[in-house]
Amino acid sequence: MGRSTKLSDEEIALFRNAVADSQPIKQNQVIPDTPKPSPSPAQTEADNQAVVDEMQNAEYDDTHLERGDELLFSKPGLQKQTLRKLRRGQFNIEGELDLHGMTTVMAKEALSTFLKRCKSQNKRCIRIIHGKGLGSKDKKPVIKNKLNNWLQKRDDILAFCSARQVDGGTGAIYLLLKRN
Image (cartoon, rainbow, N blue to C red; front, top):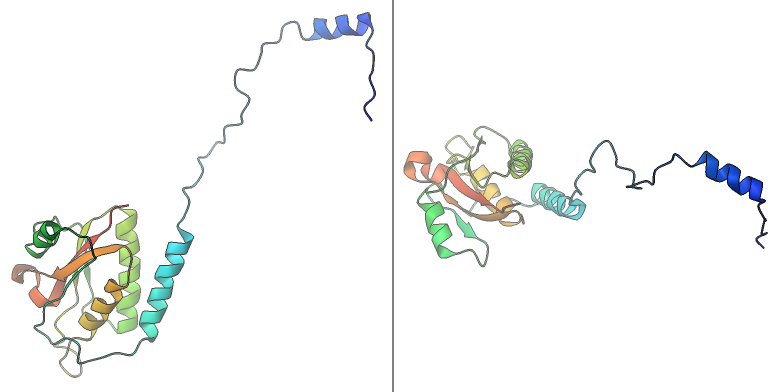
């Protein structure tokens, strides 16, 4: 298929004369002006959104927790020492979200947005104030119960527990996020 073309001595001399001053290329790759964006964890985000959607449509069990009940949750494998430090309030609180007065839908959306921001900023320990339910219709904690269920289903949460009295007691939680 390929034709072999014979070059004359005159053509070879002409070519060599034309490229005589050229230098070999040291690097032959194109370097983009802007760096590549980091890959986004599409499946993790889809899973988290599925959990959010499921939580919004789940039935509410108002007998789950009472106003004074403490919340405590940790993923399997978390060291007891770490959970003990969290319960004692020995981690620096790097962010805070107050859900007082919000509806369940508003609280869920605010929580999702807040947790995304905390993860992007590499925050490890945060406080979420959910209240004790004194302002609810039946004087029972609605957001507290929902929050307990929502957080246990998320992959990016290592542990959470009710805060110390000075930080809100059973009306707030300390939450420990996984490291990025």
